[in-house]
Amino acid sequence: MRSCSACKPPATADQLGFRAGLGGEVTRPDLDAGLLERDRLATPPTTQSIFWGGLDLDLNVARAWYLMLSGIAERGGGDATSQIYGGFSTRF
Image: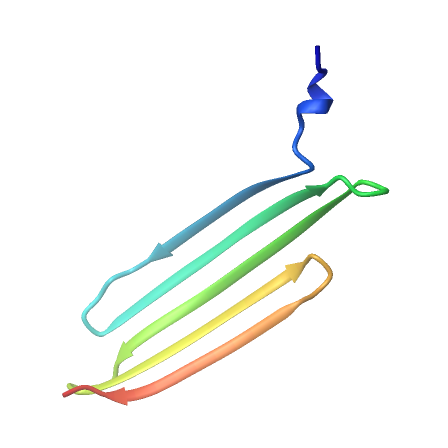
């Protein structure tokens, strides 16, 4: 008969996340964030916690002009990253 600890996978992860947004004709903001906790059965055993968050904004500037801004940040797990992106275009 095997014990419960022998049945445990070599690594486990728990994740919690959410996303919220508002829809509109002129602007549409979206917010997302989450937390990932990962147990690693190494020598010695470690637990990593990674948090991320982001914000997207879509904006109709004029009838045919469109502006998009996006940003995301991630902390934990040894590396910290941040990214900002934007675009401006016309629709036809």
